[in-house]
Amino acid sequence: MERMDMRNTPAQGGIVVGLDLGTTKVSAVVGEVDADGITILGVGNVPCRGLRKGVVSNIDQTVRSIREAVDAAQTMAGVEIDTVYVGVAGSHIRCQVSDGVCAISGREVTHTDLERVLEGARAIPVDADRMILHALPREYVVDNQDGIHDPIGMSGVRLQVRVNLVTAATSCIQNVVRCVERCELDVADIVLEPLASADAVLSEDEKEIGVAVIDIGGGTTDLLLFADGGIAHTSVIPAGGNNITLDVAAGLRTPVAEAERLKRNYGCALGRMIADEEEIEVPGVGGHSPRRVARRLLSDIIEPRVEEIFGEARRRIEETGMLEQVSSGCVLTGGAALMEGMVECAQEILGMPVRLGFPVGVKGIFQLVQGPQYATGVGLVRYGAIQLGEQAQKRQERHGSEPAKQAMEAAAGAKGTRIWEWVRAAF
Ligand SMILES: Nc1ncnc2c1ncn2[C@@H]1O[C@H](COP(=O)(O)OP(=O)(O)OP(=O)(O)O)[C@@H](O)[C@H]1O
Ligand SMILES: [Mg+2]
Image (tube, rainbow, N blue to C red; front, top):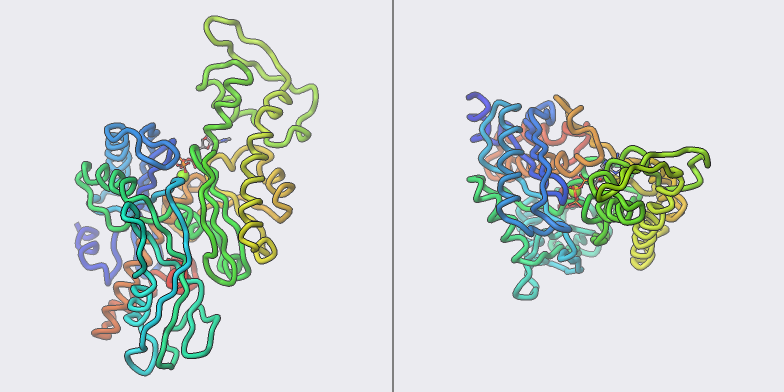
């Protein structure tokens, strides 16, 4: 009951729930935000077949999976869930640059000024069937000084911002919201999934000096670039782990479920990492008996698809002209990143250092969200925590209250650094 009360007074912390609607699974992650940071209280993971490439294709199946995942998470956490931060992805997501400008209302830049200038940057015509998800600041200009990432507290009369506007197809978002609302849950906010994943796995240093995040999920591969201290590009490659599974099923003539198992247990993205004599047993389809094949054959099927995905990621990074700026390299998240040889293969194709990204900066039963496939769910909770902090900050600007300060510190403590500073720059 105590927790429920806290949720109603977010200035003192609260419960934040992230809902990751993936192509293969729905995960609900419950976190408690307080002065010590974020504590994971409960997690619910349920397989889901209601989405295709990030877009709802079957409302009933999606609703059922959301219900199951949220039920499991709330039972584990011992709290009642009524509001969620929902992640979205898919090829319908687009990114464009926009500028905003406003007069600084007092002597120095406040949160309210930031809100106004971002509002200005959002005020551009977008297609009737699209909506703006995020205005991600790339840089601020105060009077004539440019290249500013955190203008709060700076003196001046004129504030400008250049943002990346992330837009989405309204109907796709409406379908996601409809599914969540059919579960009697309120949507606190809609968040671009790779933004959430990146926040969960990146260090402050990586964001500062430039990094690429590649989230290889079941249906899609999401790319996000940090350069010049802000988010510089985001796009979606319409292929992921499920394509690899289907390639294996066709190539080895085995049922899809078996192909998935073989991929997870023996798959490798680089054929030359496998000794010639290694063999695996492949179950047949339609009554054909199982046969033994070289494990190398499995990776020969997998490798071209993985190369295709990383090749496309490289092409897109080059297209943005930011290959040089992504100095700290690439971080892989998403379930498909778990396959043997993925890091090595990415390293070769992208020509930069590559590491696996595991969610960091949370306490509690974090073992349950330790895989790269949970980066999105954890990132959504972190996003929600930061919003609590920002709401508190705004209240503090208006009333100067002590609890607001505590909530700010809580959000900051989530990663041992002032993460919300980054969020001011990122979201
Ligand atoms: N150990 C493993 N080896 C290889 N692939 C794996 C492994 N574990 C999971 N995967 C693959 O990861 C994919 C699922 O990843 P993830 O859970 O990140 O996707 P999702 O969030 O449901 O989908 P999306 O983000 O595309 O909407 C599946 O294709 C699955 O086969
Ligand atoms: Mg995903």
